[in-house]
Length: 163
Image (cartoon, rainbow, N blue to C red; front, side, top):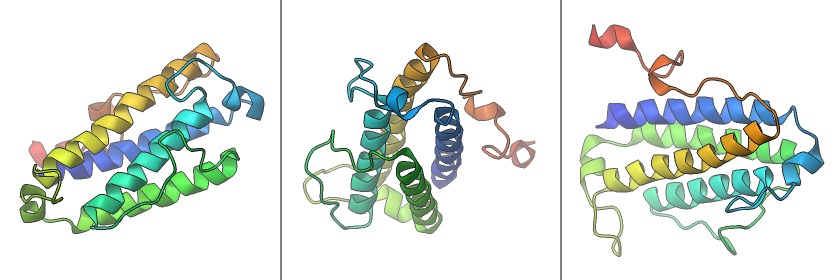
């Protein structure tokens, strides 16, 4: 089970790098433009993804992330947002490296009565859901964000181990 989450962590980090790089092709006004998405703009959606990753990660670590609302703009400046995303992806990787199979199988929250692995599955699924929205907004803006198929991206899956 842990190996799956390590793979998803590598994938998420790589996709975040690809999508943030693709965003550099747009001007600030284009990143902030209301595109009728759940969180309005590309910046709004990227901020939501970052915030919710921080909320879930804090919860996984027995902590609490303070926030005002799920549509809160943590960073309006794209460069600052990108640096914060990279730091959060690093923190996710470090947490994944340290989590055990036993911890994944145990309950993680006194209010949410399911195993940690269920919450971690949701954590990655949520990111993928909103990355799909960002991909749509980038496509509409004429930006190519590259390949997104997990099994074919270098560094995500080590196929030599299963041969």
